Length: 157
Image (cartoon, rainbow, N blue to C red):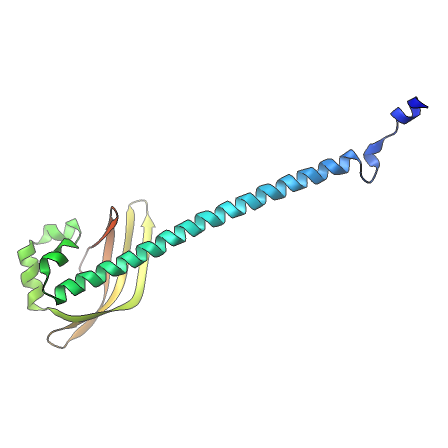
């Protein structure tokens, strides 16, 4: 009788080892897929949070720049320029140029772009500037991230 029991094939039973093995593989694959999806979502969340933080700081830099120009704090505004702009003119030249056509007010328009590339992080912020002579113009102010600080580059004014 023992010989008969030893030869019974349980692999075809409904709850046999073959079905249990397949179920285990499916569970492992599902677990791996779930972990991968969670990891991708976590990375996307971190990147989104970093971009939002950068965008806020870029807007703050543009607002501070035009606020400094409105207040006649030309040296402070000059300090917010990127190195390329500061090489184009001295702080005194910058002060003379901006004092001749000084802003009286500014409003951020809501246009905002942040771009990350292998060369660095850049962005643009939209602003409408009103000048002391009553004229106004809308501008897209170009910026570049310099370490942890945003700097105004190109032609901001």
